[in-house]
Amino acid sequence: MHGKVTQLQKLFSNKKYSEIISIIDNEIDNKDLNSGLLNLSGVCKLLSGNSKVNLRNSIQDFRKAYLKEKTSINALEALKNFINASMDLFDIEFKSDNNLVNEKILDEILVYFEENKFFFKNNEDYCKAIIRVFKRRLDIDSVIYYLNLFSNKNNPDTTSSLIYFNCFKKDWKQEDFFKISKKLEEQFITYPGTKLFDIKINKKKKLTLHFFRLI
Image (cartoon, rainbow, N blue to C red; front, side, top):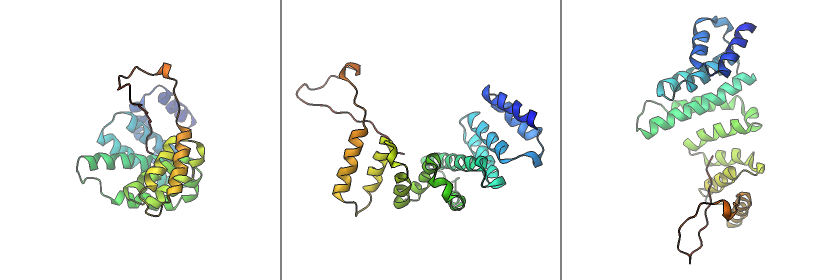
């Protein structure tokens, strides 16, 4: 089995995703399919092509990988991938006004999340994944809670997200808005004018550009 793992690692480094999937599906006994291999299979299916079929198949692998072990590092990584892949598919179906993705997937994710809350609180990537679920559930308090867990990392994306979601709270104080806005201002990168493209504007007006994204 060790030799097979080495082979898979080499294939992955060479981006031979289809070969990896074939080996896992056809050459490895079910009893040897651990969480790590199932997670690898799901990742390879995602990387094989951006299609809903690949996305659905990867979700199945990530679910199996998590349920196989639940608390191992590989299983937790699979759970993170399961959440992100499920939310990607959820968004695709939602934008196309298609009901193929049932909201029960959100309930399933939250069940798994409750089993691993401790690990989420200590991992920024896990937090970002579960925030996607809370956003779709309109659970603003939970979104803010998990954003705050890593808000001290001086990341303008996190800070701008905190501002955005706190604006939905009627009890958010004006002084708190001002304080966090000043923090965001400090986090913005100031580029020297010599490195910017020439922008033709009204010379009498001052143009200020800020770029940020929400988590």
